Length: 238
Ligand SMILES: Nc1ncnc2c1ncn2[C@@H]1O[C@H](COP(=O)(O)OP(=O)(O)OP(=O)(O)O)[C@@H](O)[C@H]1O
Ligand SMILES: [Mg+2]
Image (cartoon, rainbow, N blue to C red; front, side, top):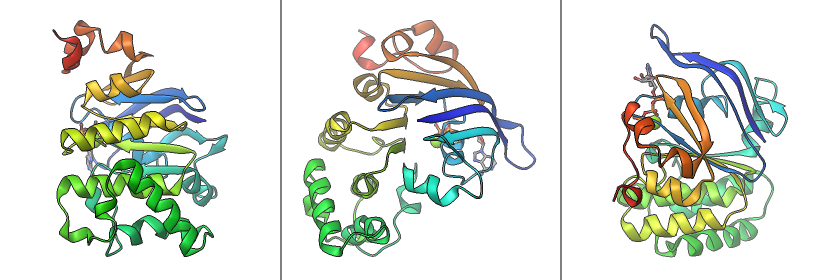
């Protein structure tokens, strides 16, 4: 469903932020992407919808990410950015949520019905008609996630989806994600959430893939995690 083959990327004038990263995410699989600050998680995600142009090959549902295929690739991929502010551009939450679906041909009524279902699933119906610039940081993150869910993409990339969420919103997010039969790549420092949601984990350090395996194995491996500046999930550290 999603393949990275020898993906390498350097920001101008810097050492490589990604070096020869190779792995694939199978249809319907939920994969956690972990690694210390600066490991390359966000950079890797940005290469998928072509926000950054990497060398090597990335394929999305069999389609290579290149300039010709970009529109089609972006239609398949939903992306929750690490910074929700750079994702919201309509005045109200509901406007943002229906923008994509209406653009892809749904009527306003159909798009609103879909958006309302997502808001209800996430327990944030109260944010529906609020202005994006007048809601809190955590509310904005929930709204950004809702916007991507409302698009119903084949593949979802989520960069730090649980950061700044209170416990109830974090739980609502986890339950919603678990209930979705969707291919997902989730970058996070919230290793308890990763353990709860993901069957597989990829560990990055210094732009290189260090480990790729079962979440239950990698997230239990104290030595491996500590060697790469991480710690055991709280639920496994007692
Ligand atoms: N716009 C940029 N220009 C130059 N270097 C950058 C830029 N963005 C990120 N980097 C560098 O690329 C490397 C990977 O950064 P990236 O944002 O992918 O890390 P990350 O794993 O997402 O970290 P975090 O956990 O802090 O979100 C880091 O060394 C970072 O300093
Ligand atoms: Mg990041």
